[in-house]
Length: 445
Ligand code: ADP
Ligand code: MG
Image (cartoon, rainbow, N blue to C red; front, top):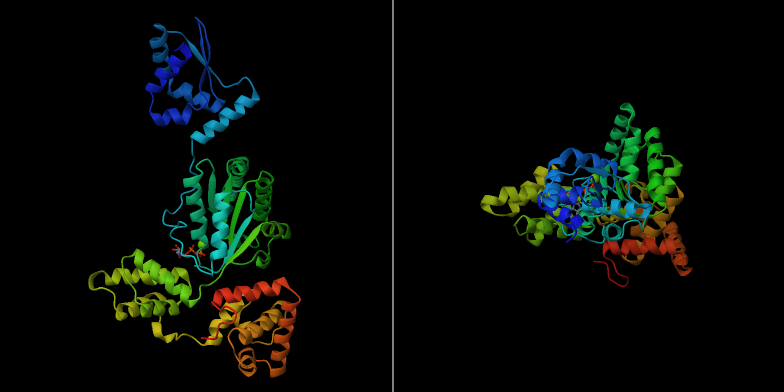
């Protein structure tokens, strides 16, 4: 063993594994002479730290190896840029920095997947497996439908599977507060470093919070541009589509649309039942079909369903689950008696899904308002009701408050578009099929 190796071996034995890994990733013995030992490290920051903290260990090591005291110096310059780069990189890798705490419960494994959210789930998993490829990744949908859960799942997945990747999760509100604080403290340089240089994946939750906040949006724009230029992954969450973000700079909206945009829908009754059962199972209780249905019918918000089941688990810990405890839990959480909301009318259920698919309000569907998107939603809706729900023309007319001839006309129009291969219309019909569990040829149940 030569003297350099010996120094390293002894030094290492004097330090904890953690300190060694944290601070000595770039450490090497650069020169040995009778009068001076020269060490080298990756940067000046490490150099200062080692000088401050490990003087005693260096001194002792030198005495042990050479049998006498020889002064030492630590340099932070490294022969070639290439080596420097490699070594700094290595140091970063050995020092996984946790930028954000992720909720350990919010994992992909704990995420119930159904037709309503599978697109978002698949996208999130793809992005977590190969960050930087689908950029930006934009998830939107109503509250309580699992968007934040998905972001945390991505974070947890990345930390587990690619510890080298530096992930930062912030809410848009925190982004704003940090920026304001930085401006106030004259430390915008540092803010920019944090959000641009130091990370590989940036996730910003509830981006709609920045609507109308023009100055913050400008900073965000430059942040995103910088990250995109360096192939860093951006993940964004919103309660609405990019184009529905009013008072947002057009240049930002167009960035949002550049990559993969996915929507989380509201779950249909069957999926809600499945979610209720999954939560129940996690809580160690078993739900009958009827119970699960009752819960599912009381809300199509995943957060609410989860709340009901948690309450149920708590209340039934002593006496077990019964129809009564289910009804009570539903009442406590939703604020009304479970059975009041009957399997709603078929129209109501259909309108809810249809409105989700076209991003319009259910109440607009049978109103007199006319926009291109609404007309399309109505036409496709009428066609779907005829073809897959097997409604008569007059039933459909009643649903949409339209006369017989306009229903017939709409159905024809959509059929024609499909025949001509209009992919947009196809996609909508397909989505409705999926969300309503209707395959072609299946009879209306
Ligand atoms: P959002 O961010 O869309 O408002 P959250 O991600 O906060 O919704 O979800 C609300 C609650 O519902 C969380 O406790 C989350 O774990 C749970 N949740 C939502 N969707 C799912 C799902 N598909 N599977 C399991 N839990 C879910
Ligand atoms: Mg959220």
